[in-house]
Image (cartoon, rainbow, N blue to C red):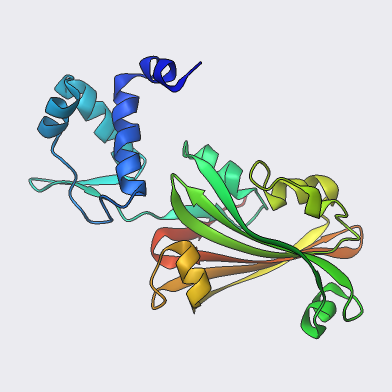
Length: 239
């Protein structure tokens, strides 16, 4: 089925939603910008006011847009959530929100443990480690830089994975079943390379999650995950 046929089978209100999301992802409308009025969208798409209203109303419910009485509809401050009480793939979290996930592999290399990493992995210095850096996107917006070191003893096939179709978390949960994890969170200014990957200013604060996972009695991976503080939050609950 080609793109034209797929579009024909997509409900019109969904096409309007996709258009609005694409404009936001492309940066045409940024947080706090007013979007075109419903009447303008009615003329642009040649549809009923009810159809446009449904698209805008659903995006408002999904907290992509926000309405201000008498002032119009604006792009909301985007606060993407991640759970802390269970380790999930970021791709699953994004899809659970009905949004599109994609990733961009920035680095995949075989390295050697520095003294600090050797201590964290409980390995001898200069032991082999795998290293990856991946940017994760939600609806085209970069929301996480994942900088991960992996123990080859736990995940020997890590370097052979296609990280465009599987996340490191998804692979590791299968290859090195989770035995335990420790983590910390802090607010840090983004270094220049991280800021560029997240498309933010270096003066902006990031929420940085550092997580160590264990499997079969060994440290399996150590990941540092950078999130733009103005569009991300962590959440969790337990009974």
